[in-house]
Image (cartoon, rainbow, N blue to C red; front, top):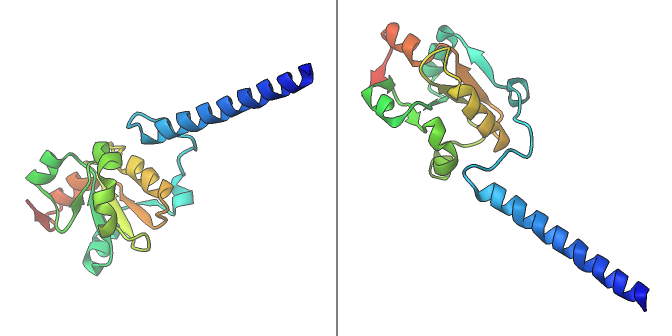
Length: 155
């Protein structure tokens, strides 16, 4: 009789642990402050690499690459690479779904922010990698360099 009660209590405890774990994972996944369960992909794993200004301009001229500006919207509004989309890094999680149709996974994406000192491009490259994007490039010198060279811009 005691073994039957002990077994039932053990099964109930296991069920509670499984339910608590599932609830915790679901909450973490839905929370904007959730923690990463897997490590971010490296640039090598993403096939992401930093491009020079000349390499970036060649992609721009070829017209086959999507340019993604990850600076804040107010900075984007003051000027950006012609034809670029704006998905601010701090809004990536919240707004990616609206951009997904414009960012096919098989298309090459070039990400840029202000300058070589800006880490937002690398951050967004990692997030895209977690979503299955593999052809991601980063314009190392960013908007500052593009603008200094007098290349095509929009406001």
